[in-house]
Length: 237
Ligand code: ADP
Image 1 (tube, rainbow, N blue to C red):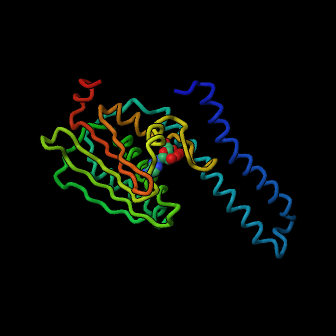
Image 2: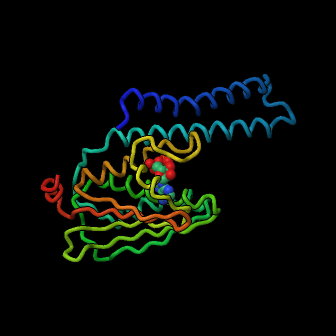
């Protein structure tokens, strides 16, 4: 694991970049704005800067919430959780974003899925991070398909969540590193590299397992297995 110093430096850097963007854009807007408003003919320019301020601020917000999720991971507050309902809620939260990315989501939820003793909001985070990554993996193609499924294992002692995409996939050397905190292949500012570290931490804290199947050009499958009973987690840990 990276040292605390390295972590704080990356965090500071990740937040500082969009923030200085916002500062520059705001200063440009200040300069354009006269006492009686935005001068005729410069409205479009002004609006463009304002749109960028919104985008940069939203990005900073995402980074900060990733960081919060990362620091909170590991202490699940368990209750009876319905993974299917969590998947449904999460998909409706991200459906707009996925539509904008031309990503179609298909769901195959096991109607007889047992409830699990788990932290619902942490599981929501798991589904959200996996689904958004899946969508992002299809970005280069311009369109994609993501399939989310749930099922129980044979003895119904575990539930399995699968998120599959037909995106760019990963070579083995990348696959090995994806759960490391701050590991990312995304452009500067696009990703912080905490999404899968958070997922990994949450799954571990629940006594579960996560597997990845992926090959370049062949898409990716993430499979999360969670024990139905919270006790199983304690016994395993
Ligand atoms: P971030 O999304 O900020 O980059 P993550 O920890 O969520 O951070 O992911 C780390 C890296 O793992 C990504 O940058 C990407 O290279 C790779 N990755 C994650 N999910 C997928 C996927 N579904 N398909 C291909 N690559 C993926």
